[in-house]
Figure 1: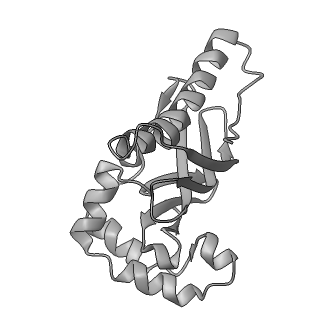
Figure 2 (figure 1 turned 45 degrees about the vertical axis):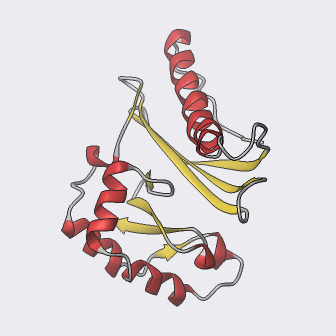
Figure 3 (figure 1 turned 180 degrees about the vertical axis):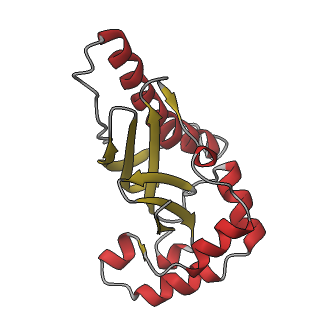
Length: 186
């Protein structure tokens, strides 16, 4: 089950429909179609169990930022995974924005991510030691981190809050699959 928001009250039904279709199609493509396509050669019938809930992290007349969290499991996979996905939309132009619309993806960003202690994920919320997550982030090679963010590898996503840019990066499954790193003032 995927829960996703729908925009209302813009005063333009056509614009609302375009934005709502963008939200729906983006999450279905990334969280349902792409994972099933990845495993399509393993069996003719893959069963995907998916539970995603959303949170609107920023909503202004110009921007909408939404983060989805939950879990997924494809029956041929080794184990269930914690999931994170997000979308940030330019409401005026009705387009999905990229991380590069807000920051340069370079060594400086990689270092800011690796030096941050404002980190969390589902595993920490379930009682894991935050230091394990910080160490996992610090052990990511800068070039791998940069490439993952540029190419938007699984778990490499971002969302906005009124006071920060939150970047998600891949960490080992043992520490939660992803880490959310809050970069204040971005």
